[in-house]
Amino acid sequence: MTVSAATTSPNDHATMIVPRLFVLELSAGKIHTMNIDGSGRETIVTDCRLPDGIALDLDAGHIYWTNMGVPNLDDGSIERADLDGGNRTMIVPQGHTHTPKQIILHRRDRKLYWCDREGMKVMRANMDGSAIETLVDRGSSELRQPDLTRWCVGIAIDDETNRMYWTQKGPENGGLGVIYRAGLDIPKGESASARSDIEVFFDGLSEPIDLELDHGRRLLYWTDRGEAPRGNTVNRASIDNKPAEPEIVVRHLNEGIGLTLDLPNDRMFVTDFAGSLYVARLDGSDLQSLLFGQGNLTGIAYAEIARKI
Image (cartoon, rainbow, N blue to C red):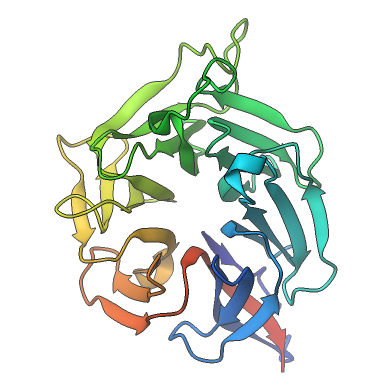
């Protein structure tokens, strides 16, 4: 996820714009912030319960993140804190979402959207965690055994067409991963478990995980956690003129997870489960490893923050 700070007055000489990364370390239950070259790391939140997805609201000065919890305990949650980690607040407590994964802030509607993996759902709520809705239910109430093909993980929203995209990862290296899309709202007279507007965008993927959308160029990007040749990659495809196959722009990740785009500066930042942080141009060229062996890294967000000087 990428966020820019609010515009400052040209006469305001007391602030400067600082680019920063916010990175989740699942294995240690921490949230770190750092410079975009990986230096200057600060730990701002600790004792998270398997953090996975992160979203920023710079206007309000907030971080939002998902805690997967222990999947068989159905104890996932969503929290919020200030950008420096202060004023930590539980906004979606345990028992309201099973295993929340990638989360995004839909700025137009001021809603949080996320995928619930073992819950097999796409969900949304107000910014304070109220008015929780299930938008897509892939069969959670009917299944007695886990069905990994129905596990929902990554999410992105296209405001131009008023549609959301989400990933269903499938079993490990099973080639059953799918990216779906549907409208933001359930069609009238239908339900979350029976929607006529769900379309397959791509199927036969290895293990698609997090999504990011380049709205200007109309390109959807995603990480794939599975094995080569299609996995351990970052992929992209046009959402208006879908190609026969997605374009692989980055290879040789070690279970790619988190992805954030810095569109004005033509770059992406990527994390993998082996604890690496990478930067590359949007076409995948000039790939550089910034950090490695930093625990199990999951969600990542890029932001340009106004700071007093």
